[in-house]
Length: 119
Image (cartoon, rainbow, N blue to C red; front, side, top):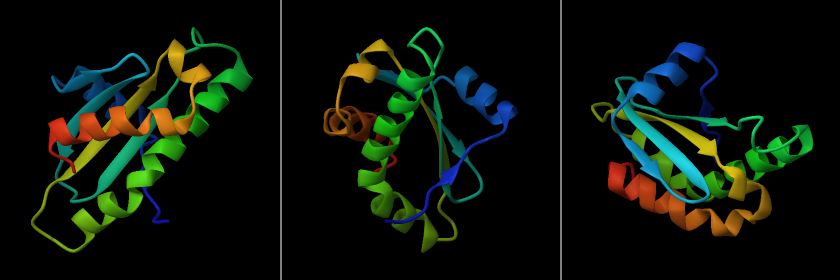
């Protein structure tokens, strides 16, 4: 399993929320923007509307597990090529995320990444 770079700065999250690239699914919302770093970075957010602390933590675990199914493809695509532009991605959990397994999130994540040109 390759390590993916996480986004922790609030200004990057805000920039992604303002971006025009947004893919909405019943389980998640995916915001995508290009960066000039040549690496793939991701962030996960879960609102308090989804549930309490235990439910929000489960949502983050489920999303992270589904995202790591593509970890090798995401890191290999950018590490070898210096001229390739990277992507910043924020995945926002919705209420349905708390009640599904990570295997059910693999397809929406793949669809969003394919539409955005990441995979």
